[in-house]
Image (cartoon, rainbow, N blue to C red; front, side, top):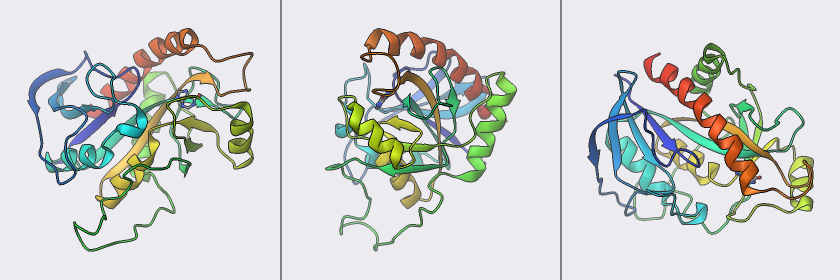
Length: 245
Ligand code: HPA
């Protein structure tokens, strides 16, 4: 039996739609997870849920223990992981409120524990990242978005930046020249570690602002939060379909 795990980000520090049946603290070789893993039912289907930023959205992107989080989900039996991602839109197609299922990424982060291979665990492997997301799960997400009435953009290159500050106009212009469509702060090392752990991982991104210099004037938290509220409703619908598919 396949078990789905959802890693919640901004807007998903908790998941009221989930009927929680148990909450597990998992010991991992990498230390503590962001929060205990919730085991529960979403529209009747069993799933795992873990808020990436911890309870109350306290952990900044560079302090998240990505290795522990993914290790714990696998230890509890997850084989498929959906990473939710509130993002800024760079490309013209990626306007606020768009849903997107990225197909590739570029990692601009630094100083994060980004690999399970630290010389102390298993023998070193250099995992293939030609297609960094699980194509099968991308397909499931794309179909679920269509079924939910909120069709997703079916591709996109995700830029993972360091944060927690937002980018400068010049930084976004550079990401655009690099071929990036979307920008967020947590997609890496999450996707890379998931691949190292043999998990089928894909991201469901929702655009909550135009990236720096792409909209008018400064980016405000009010704008982000207002878009986030709408996106959370759409994503919740999609996840119900994915969980019960
Ligand atoms: N940049 C980086 N991360 C983000 C953004 C952004 O504009 N919006 C939401 N997460």
